Amino acid sequence: MKENGFLKWLSGSTRSVYWHDSAIRCEQLEGFSNGAAGMTTNPFLVNATLRGDTAFWRNRLDHLPKGLQGDVKVEELVRCVTGFYAEQMLPIRRMGIPGKGYVCAQVNPNRTGDAEYMFEQAKRIASWATNVVVKLPATAAGIEVYEECVALGHNVAATVSFTVPQVLAVGEARERGKRRAAKNGTTPGLGIAVMMVGRLDDYLRDVAHDSRARAGEQDIVNAGTACMKRAYGLFNERGYDTFLMPAGCRGVNHVIDLAGAKVIMSIAPKIAKMLMDVNQFEERIDVPVDPDVIDRLMDMNEFRKAYEVDGMKPADFITFGSSNRTTTQFIECGWNPLADFDYGAGELL
Image 1 (cartoon, rainbow, N blue to C red):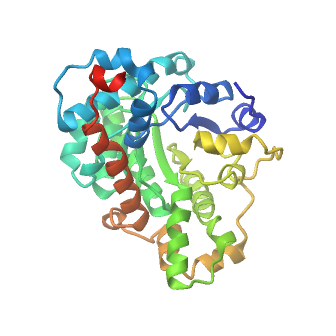
Image 2 (cartoon, rainbow, N blue to C red):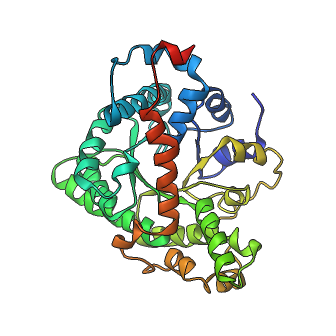
């Protein structure tokens, strides 16, 4: 395993918790050798590991019931992968350190507006293991289910989330859920609000080109970071105990500029590899983004939606550009291909 000095510093000497963002076993082992203490999956990552590392999963897949179809089949395949990693995480979880020893499993991205469907699926996923975190979309319906899961004591994360209004709505939902849990004598589980910082940058880059905005590339690559720093300050002011999770990073800047924050950082192998060349061990969460950069970004209405506290209402979350792009990827490159995956012996040879 290659030693990654930055990740070992980040995970060992700062308040930041490092989670590995991949379901491929060899990548997971390397991440954990460098300080990862949890991991996230999604339909895309589950599909990638089952198709790209089929020999590793052969034994577990052979124990699945034959003839499964559709969403039932996909859910069992997701359970196959996340269940294995949940077992691997248990020794870390038993140490009782907040944010450590968990693995995520995501609900069906085809149903991001269906609260009733997602709630029933969330309860099933939560039953798989005590250290599984149910990933719900940060849509109006998803946040409604998030609150219900908190009230029941489940571990829960809101994903497909890119903006300050979304994570604030998640933080508020957890507070409501905690109050309900307390009335019932229930202890809330882990709560996470994801912000896909790099995916926001990707979307705004296209918006900037299309609208011929003043914002240039050096402004765009700071957009997600600016939103995360604003959200982090607001979470601290309001006393939310929900962990923010920077995710969907596109470069080392997304990790370096948030280093030291009390967050869970989801870091993919590609970004981890880039960080091996970083020798700047400095906590930068309190270093503000240049106001001139934010001023240029604010020319774009889509950035204002993402940055301002009241930039969007919950009903708008499902239609935000980044939400559509990401949901489509999870469907077309994850959930739907898993429905077509032949987990019998023929495909595994």
